[in-house]
Image (tube, rainbow, N blue to C red; front, side, top):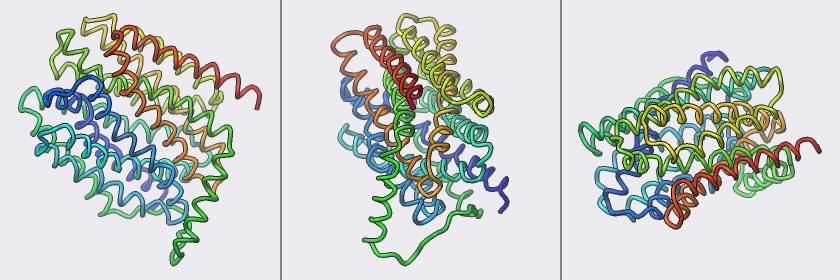
Length: 389
């Protein structure tokens, strides 16, 4: 398979995988948990638990892809996208829902680092544009998933939405297993467990000493704290403000729509003007739009703010992934992407938990203001740290 066909395949599979994943995640998950009697704190835990899987597994899975090749990990990842959605209609209590979310988190934990590393290897000279295009494709899943999920819940109930999510995941499985992805990564077979663990540890050590990778990944974590908070509590806030589930789904759709179209453009701009200024700019945009959301109840204004947050996400993401790839050695590229994903998921998992605690004890405006302040602080730390390197 040629370079361009491999790229088209990984982007197409990514679209269907993330449509499936986001049909379950936004706004269905929070509303489903609330229907089972979950408190704000428990909703935060349920939304974040799948991301905790990524915290535990993204770095090891990225390092394993450096050893065994990307296709091996991607094959496992697409299965983890396709099958779990069919189990949600059978869930009747919060403990079972929490456990299923942890298992469903294997999908992004295993698939994402290998997919990003594959794209970075295919286009070493135009990484910003290529990674921006790939992440825009996965973002289209965030665009269509909430829209389809929200309106299916509104029209036909939770079970229909979950089953359709499984159908999209199975389409991704069929596409990936029926076509051959060929990337120039040496696959080393026949190694014992001791050798594999030693190579994984070597990759961990190299990446852990790479300050630029760590600092850049922390900016993604700050952005994802806000993203996770929105994922968990924008549906509940929207319903309290008089919106229906379909309209709440549209808020996530317009956020993803803006990000989808912005990421390739901002990736190309980062190739030309540099990654660092755009990361700082994106964090400031995210903070400014995020802090305004709980002060608004009109649907058109909430759409505008959601679009603004999506643009800020695109500005950060299209530059941060490329900067991590630029700063990683070829032999540890998967580990570098895994490290970024792990740190990012720590932020993503923390967002719903932190927001749940703050909202339960303070209010929506105070909670959102504190989280927005964290994004501005991260932008300042990143700028100062990069200037000193």
